[in-house]
Length: 108
Image (cartoon, rainbow, N blue to C red; front, top):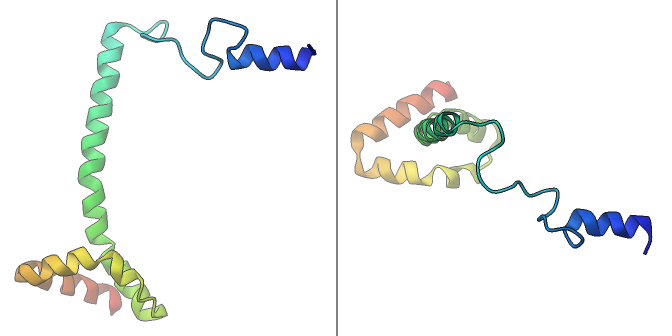
């Protein structure tokens, strides 16, 4: 067996009891206290909540630049991305008015 084959088998886990070099051991990271682990979990939860709130706002606000792009380039496929907003605007007239006003700001 060549040296290269032994190294490949060792790193794949075939010659050792470990799962391989790309797998971390189970449990807490060495040097991390229980308090640090809880803080890391709380930070992850806060990040998830912020992203969950930020992405829908970004989606709604991006309709203005998208309307500008459709007007300038005639790229009608972009309209399909914003179909849910137009459908919602059909059922909620104040939302429809606000979206039209915002798109007109971008289209000039």
